Image 1 (cartoon, rainbow, N blue to C red):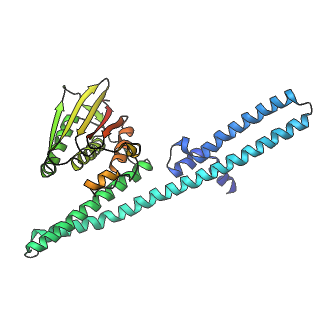
Image 2: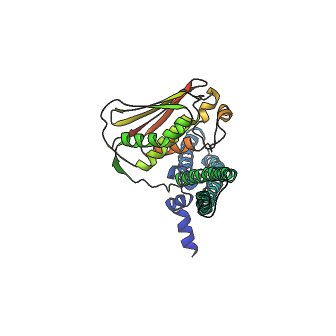
Image 3: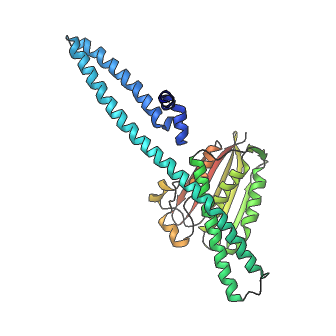
Length: 315
């Protein structure tokens, strides 16, 4: 039994799988690398020592002293990383469990609200209907937040599977524009869509790419003021599809731009115009684009607007 436990401890790959993180971020793998570095350092110290010192016992003592010191530091660093990795694993599991548990009651609440609003259970007065609408809107916001938290949890634990299919990004974008058209009209925002050339079909995960474009378009509409415009462009660049969405909205202050893809971050100037939002959309978008083999970036100026772009491999 003890030998089995020792074998499990020495199996670095299995230990890293427990934390659900890449091998090069795993504490045990880092300790192994530091062990190799310590061995190289000890050999180097020994070779230098015998060159400059006459007494071999003194050389051996110095080498042992250096090795012991480096081992203590390596062990302390590894233990710290191990505790952080374990805390991160528990946090991701907690978010995943809570989000899953919240989905069912929220779905039931939404279903009951729609049933009450339909009038099938009795007549609904106008003032009651307004309260039901508020309840429905807040339920939808909670469902959106839970969905984002689940996505973040799956990204961090590498449990967001890729389901690649062949699809047209142009059709995907047109479909999303159609979906957001009522929201854009209600916000007095005009959406212009331009395709510069005939585009090839893409072999990738269309659902995840849809989520990215959905996030970018939703942000562009929310943070563009009345009578504003949004320009969407798609073109082919080498072996990639280039997507760009430009708005003339509130923009992002320069001091906040380095944090824009971090979890839960929302710029201060944005809160003046739009209080809703979890601050997870851009974090999720960046993580998804990188998983799909692409790159994402932006340029922005406060009070002028923002341009977000990404590239995605055709195959």
